[in-house]
Image 1 (cartoon, rainbow, N blue to C red):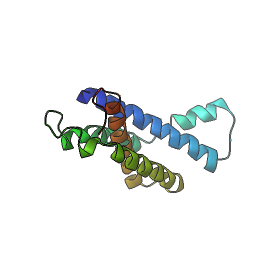
Image 2 (image 1 turned 90 degrees about the vertical axis):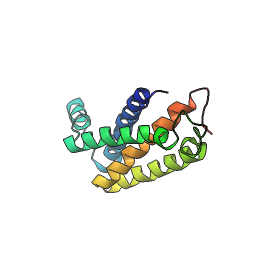
Image 3 (image 1 turned 120 degrees about the vertical axis):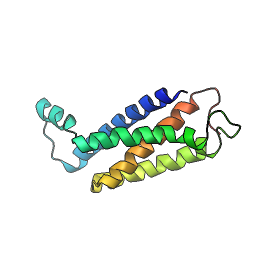
Amino acid sequence: MKKKAHMIGAVIFAVSGYYIWHFLHRAFFIPPDPSLRATLTSILSMEVLLFFIMILFSMIGGTLPDILDPPFTRRHRYLAHSKALLFLFTLAWSITLYFLLVDRSTVTWIIYFFLLGYISHLVLDSLTPAGLR
């Protein structure tokens, strides 16, 4: 896949990951308010810093595998494009999601969105004929 496709995929995964966190956070930590207005307000109230962290670090994570394993060498689809790494990063992402539900630090958000970007790259590459190693 092209770099642009990976960047778009990373942002889509990051936005989806933010909403996964948002709905889990509301479900477990905030008393329910059934009004539609309260729900829409909470969904759309992302902090500006968090928005830039989401975009920047998901794009970095989404393009890093091709920097580590360049697509035009014989090493492409080596360690940075492996199924084992996809499994480990998905596990790390779920652990990071747990930590975000408990304590929302900026460093944890950075790790969360970076992992989502990297995972998106591996998922999108797994859909190509070359697949993952």
